Length: 121
Image (cartoon, rainbow, N blue to C red; front, side, top):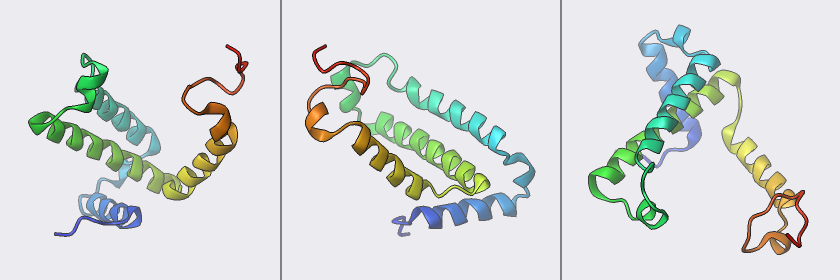
């Protein structure tokens, strides 16, 4: 099966999954964000005690488990966006545009600092 679906196709698949099981009454934004938070916590557990380099080198069963947790996060986030009528791709591009303005490439290259911090710090 080809899983190179768009976010719109994934949204439709998830909506159909919920409808086929009559789970709509459980799919409120409040419940979905709570489930999303739990899944992010499960994702964090895989990295909690790893060093920076170790976190980049996961493999095998751990990498697969991380991928499954990331999928859970995406699924709940996608369901929440669907319930709220938010186009995630559009707002992600909007947020990227905001970040481009907030963190100009030349001013922030190579080091992180908040936009309100003095450049000399």
